[in-house]
Image (cartoon, rainbow, N blue to C red):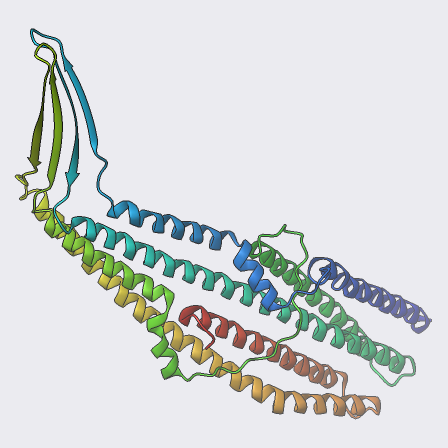
Length: 421
């Protein structure tokens, strides 16, 4: 009597699990098709890069800063505005005076100011390139993470179907007394665990899709499609060649332009010991006599307070130059460390990808096939069968993860050196 009551109960449990699996599988594909895979026109990675370069707010802001810096160059090279003056004196003798005056910095000062503005604009251009490369790198990383989540969901979904088959086989074996009841419960528990894992991957897909929409400046619910799969791309250059390319890195070149600007600022500070000039021409009209004349004026600034002003200005400029040089050296060391780290990650991921794809996963598949055959004839217990399935699943997930890490490290290398590594 007890056994006859247990069978309907086990069947009901299994039916519930199958319905839940179908629901999660549908929710992990249909809504994702709306949010990630249902754009009217397929977008490859190249199309997404063009879109992010055109629409990303960070890139646009950097472009506006560059435009503003370039607009400063002609301003810095231009003389100060002239001064017009007019005066009328109503006394015993009415007199009208009118004229113009122009300030002239000491020769060389305007040139140095223009050079400072030019170096500032050139540095801003390198910062713009660095921002663009950084945003593109983050876009690529998000795309690879989305592909990883999608491939992981596919692997877990396939293995979930195998678990359902194992559960059905265990229940059939228990019905005829060949299998233990514990095998049935263990199979049903693992089906539930796979449902939970699929839900987690589903949430990751939604989060990554939202991040992609943010980078592309789309609405949070706008669809973003990433076509293709995770296929590691070989790195063409060795570590020595990658390190040699650091000098052309936009982040480093921006620091170099800051040093050049500091050199011009130091030269300008040293010229502040020299006086500036103001030349004025003024006309005079005497009303009673009807006489006209003119006055020529020359004003010269005297750096009288050089001990407290110009001398400390030179010290300030010198300290700023040394600080910029220190920033340049620190950035070079940081980029060299990052290049070594990313190259090491690519090398590690490449070795694991090769090992997993050519040896570990094929062996795990053979092990699973052998365990399934052995379980069907009673030579292998259910725990061994489950372990062989989970070993294969974890190896397949690790292969996809290492493929994603390989491509993400490659994207970060491209961000540093400014070109394909």
